Image 1 (cartoon, rainbow, N blue to C red):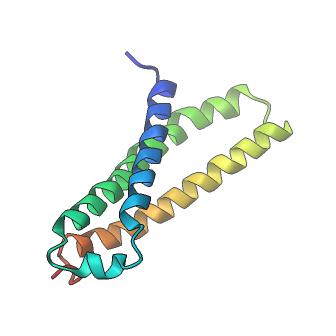
Image 2: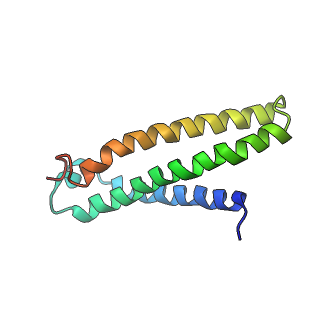
Length: 120
């Protein structure tokens, strides 16, 4: 059985893999035209899979970190040490950013799935 820390590290690696795949999918200069092309369902499906992975990880992984990891850091580490302050600031900014991205992605997903006019 893996520890929570091992699971979180695996999740971070998964996010990086999905981000790399997303960059590949979005690389062509004419990506907007390709996404709107009814014949490019595979491209849209690939984008949906990558984007949904971000949403899924945000809704589980980041909440788990906030519920379990953050309290341990606050309890057992000296929050006045500069490196701990910096790490906690990065933690908060990264999580806020991921929640914002997740909300934007939730708006985009139905469009990519043909439920909002983009691929129709």
